[in-house]
Image (cartoon, rainbow, N blue to C red; front, side):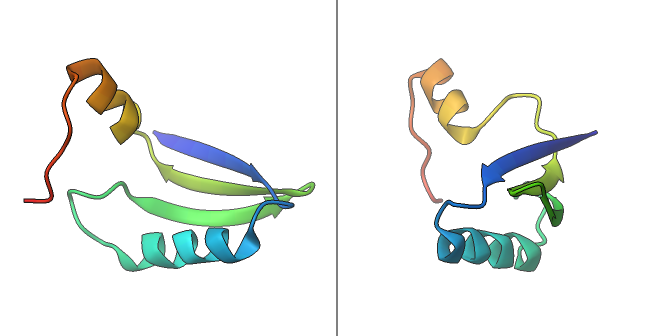
Length: 70
């Protein structure tokens, strides 16, 4: 199962490019898998591994806790 993050191309392209490069480089079982990015009708579609718990932000809100880097 995959998730698709759709971002308007008029967003900060430098920031989006950096995010894609980082995601392509990171291959770790503790990091969401990145499968590719595609331009479609003025939007950037980023295809990633589906995480059924939502985003890290959603997780922190639901547990009323923050995450450590350790």
